[in-house]
Length: 452
Ligand code: HEM
Image (cartoon, rainbow, N blue to C red):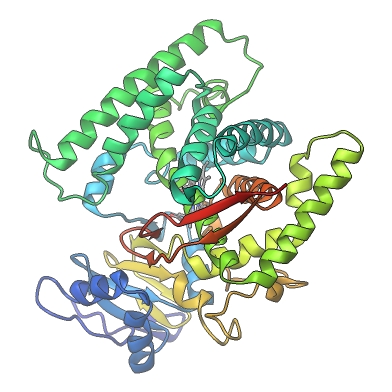
């Protein structure tokens, strides 16, 4: 079968131009070596010049259409499972299991997504998270000594994990928290491993860790079902077990609690760490953030009140700093889908069985969308509406739009607030690593000094 063209609505959809690369590996090696560099988008830039913003390639064992076009990517994300389903490397799908929210489609995905999304948006949860986050952040910062070297990435990881586990399964006990953290570390280490499940292999050990986490979570679900009065919803497990439909079995709930930790556990700490890095390199922005936060803190302390979640979300410059960090940082640089039928988008043919990579990073760093795209410039967001724009998609879009986006912004704002109002610091040299996940090579060490 040839894929060159396909007639749809009297128009000829074209298979985008591009290259298959080498036999078997395709262009994967070029893609990966570029992904490891400080400028992963170079792989795309080169091909954009030769073939246009949408081109074909061969990546990770599959023929792939790459979209660096904001409008085409938007249409892909908005399509439902009758056109595209999620695609992840094999080791990841093995670890996630069949009923994972990240993999399921249709009604069940919409139901679970809707329940989780509504809970994460609820003012009650935000109020709870604000209180918890403040407590954990203050606890953690109280230990910082003058001139001590603090690794922001580790500090935030610690705090965010505890908040997440409490929001998901209501767990607070220190011993069980430590156990879960240890197991999760073991589990996540296998996400990018070879898909070999033999005893002793990386993937096998990760699956064993997932099993141990599952046992703990199932015992929590059982306990909740026993004591459940049917009304209190303090965490995501409560929301899912109170759901009236019988679709959500204990197994599905337990598995999903672990899978939910995958997109949440690392991304928020990286967001905060990048924000601290960019601020450290832009004294004027840091000064604005400091002023904005100090003023709010003073206003609240005059009336003897703690900050509420709405306060953090209304810190407009701080939120612009977070937005700009999301644009430059590209914590999730793109998303893979697989076409379940021939799909035509704006004259481009995406053949059935092919993968499609919507690459946000190229859009976020495109000079046509953002002047001086490589400059950290939070002021660019003043009066700019990002909600209607398809050129800003750090949280994806459409059916699978990240349900944790408010939470991520809130947590980042709370951490930044406590950092800038209590400390000054000097950041040490560090480098951003972009692959397989974005992180700071040294975890961003900063030398802190408590404000008098
Ligand atoms: C800076 C932080 C974060 C970023 C950049 C981010 C980014 C994303 C993106 C791009 C997607 C779309 C995936 C797709 O279309 O296949 C997504 C989905 C998702 N995110 Fe986030 N995320 C963040 C934080 C969180 C947090 C804190 C949570 C949970 C507490 C979370 C939970 C999820 C879930 C469950 C999905 C899958 C939704 C579905 O497929 O229905 N994320 N995230």
